[in-house]
Length: 322
Image (cartoon, rainbow, N blue to C red; front, side):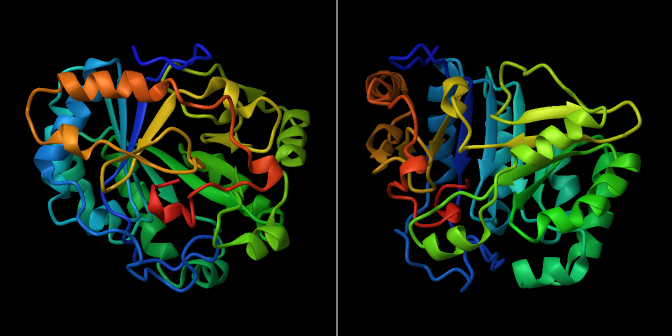
């Protein structure tokens, strides 16, 4: 099992397969994808070797992210080959929902268990303004289809001052009937978006405390869970989750590592630099890769430094999938 100097053990890998995205979300790529990152994304064989190495070191949950992963034409091969790796027990994918209904059959056949979909508002006009796309109705329809097919669905919404609070009535009304988990994620500062952060950042703790006062209760955290505080209520089909990176001791339960689409290991979302693994992915034997992972993990810090305004090398979240 991969373990850092602070005793944290890592069961969960978030693997970006592209930094390309076709949405223009205000808090990430407001001007759209500009192709300013390095080219040469990991090939399918490189991805398979990478995941085999992680799985041999105890990784049990794999999340495929982007950018927008569905833009890779070989995504089906990536998913199916990763799902077939011994030790990978849960395969998830994060998507903006673009043409979601079209992708569902392939994702089911490839063995995807869970889909996370980014929806920052249930108001179609606000959704359009944030993303640059008028697709909310189609995405919501596709979520119903995905639920009927047996997928576990989580919806990610970035908390933004003056936006999320006004939409809480809509969210709660939707969760009354819809068995999904809505996760409200505090807006995080990135290198390109300091001004946007200062304008829209708001703490999620008041909303969390309000729900707790209204009969919502905390759920036990599973071994491979991400950092969310999850809540349930007996009168609601869906659940709520909160990801609060500015809260005290947020990093103490860290159990996930990130690899970029070009093969760089990021020990933290806001690390100063990625650590290239690509040379270790040129041979089927993963022994050297596994040794490198154990060694590199000893440099993982105790926490991020977002509270001091230090965003590391992360210019925008599309770089390594958030």
